[in-house]
Image 1: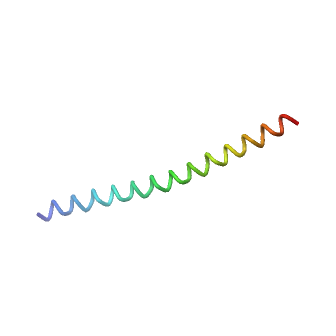
Image 2: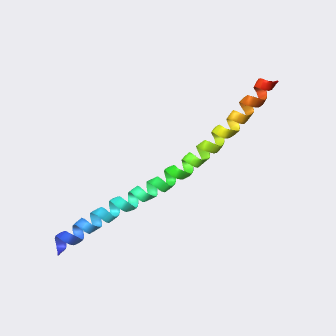
Image 3: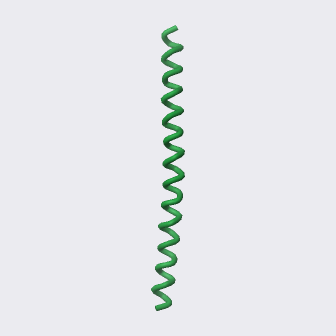
Length: 49
């Protein structure tokens, strides 16, 4: 029984850390996507001038 609990705790920790990191990376990617879109708009407006 102790082995099962150890395995479950280790796997739960790994899953929790993975989910935490994915959520953080996802928000950073959203920010990066918005920044690239703004930069693209600025570059296009300067090319027209």
